Length: 373
Image (cartoon, rainbow, N blue to C red):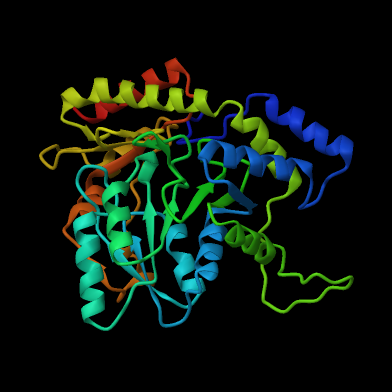
């Protein structure tokens, strides 16, 4: 069988093993250590957010952000509907209710007009949303200028889920630096990886100190183990941080390659009636995943194409199924205009790894050409 082409596999460069070797030689095989501290400094320097906590996942980062904001049972939190479950599951962790907002056509991210409409409607019904979780889907920055203005007008903090957007820019600023909190993910399929991991960033030092405290089981300052609060085992390990340090050294090159993949797909498939996620003026996407949208007039469907690629050992995947369509979130408030439903129905994620070889890309495009006929 031909070598499998994966959707977004890890891309190691050799620098990672050097850093991991340092960890083993120093015997810092624990959740704490110098590589963890260095990784946090590198992330802060990259994002422009001065304070960073490196954690076990991006989901853990969102959970801690909600806890730090004091959100709990009976509260409501606004969230993009068109996203991965890790963006909104933490809302349930704290006992709050998610309010889902549909996407805008251009970026596929949370629609600012619907966002404001939802805030006004929730207030009219006696609710006051306590936070907004904005997701930069597939690496494309949301309309943060408008969203941030709405959030400021109604005094609602913004948690910026940039899990898929490390390396993306919005009007010259790094994705992950545009909200009250910024979140990155270093899962194995992300643009850089620590095998599993994430981070929480902020300009508020006390918030990040609190995050680190909660992430290490909320241990009080004492010679014995004493706990006045419930904590979590959310800290990133020193070994994983070492991998992250090695990965960060090639981040710019990885972004460059993913963008090249996108443009190759776009140039070949656009004449076939396939459309792609638009990059508005002022935005710069890392193009973490290239996603194509089929015209409803085409006979091929995303599922028929997925199966056709799979028969040639090429991995592809449907776009995120919107959260308002998930059984676990049935009955939650939602504000729709049909965009995310259409994207899910007609979209497919294509192999986008930064180590994707030219002959592999040509094989994918050849198969797509046949399947679109």
